[in-house]
Image (tube, rainbow, N blue to C red; front, side):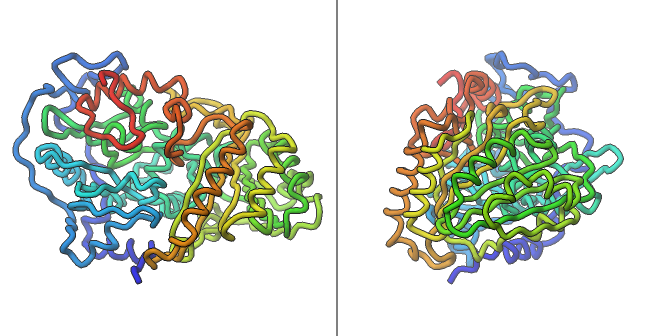
Length: 513
């Protein structure tokens, strides 16, 4: 059996040496090769003779050599190094480079270009269609770039792109600080942020990408090389706009991220469970009509399962009495089992994580955004599909949006277009035993048919999709993910990646294509 424990992977990373856990460039004052005047700002496209970093498009770079922690098929650690979180997708890359510093990423990208090898970028391994891996190509993995520099006075955090969400929440929690992250701790922080990023603090602090105020990114340069750019609202501001919602593997390889963070000393965490689905309509309808419009400190989720309904709520800087009062319209329905925990956000967040090894091996999701409350018929669709679900790990997941802070774009704007949604919805299913190859094969066809039909049945009531939860085979996915922002994204792509080096099944193509 393959050992898939995230904790063991982190231990293995740490064992490489001190260089494996230091984020690149955290103390650096700048990057060679970047124009002092910040040239490149804007979205009208580059000069025809240069790329987005200012290098001549035809310029050649010295021959590159791979550096960092390198894993090849003949190495003992290859099976675990090549495996993603979703074991439904298995790929066999030619080589995996675990970067220990930014220069390793520069070398790997240059090497891939000079040797005409397909490449993919990886951090937390949660690419839900397996797009962070590739057969017979190179995987550039930034998961070991785990440094962090926190400035509590300025409320700024600069972190390596290898931190997962649990590590980020825990690190910030030591300073009574927070930024928005998703709910699942093992997901990479950079991947979640670059696609938008939402969770319990979204209505209080905005999207994760709203808190992103800078990044270090390795981009393609010249005919066959790579360049490091420092991005912020004044330098390469068009690229920062694109990274805030469309940054996953489209424009370059992010090696560190800079966030503005907010004080958060304690939260009230509420969980309620209704056994069976008898109260589904009342619970769901009540939730969708009050939770998105409640105090913006309140972030809530509802999960409908085969045999129960779960509610989760986090009230920032709230007490148990205040949380119960705000949630009274919901908690008064039926006879739910209710628990309340008061504590620091880091401790609470760590407490509701499920160890990766205890999760199913295979997963499939469909992402949806909802603009208007679901009518009774749509809620009935949820109930009927969950009642007939193929596995106990099937569910319909929601996240309230509504009148929270996510409606306000940060300075410089973002590519994320779904701010005005009432809530996010997501049919999902998990099956198979983690670490046991082919264990879910008998259920795969039924599981995929079930979720495709479930998603389709809800189509009349939803709008758009979330790029971090891609809908493979979806018509007009460009519009679903980014709406009217897609045309601008293509122009920025043409500027910073005119050769379309960074591409995968649903990547942004340059405007020149």
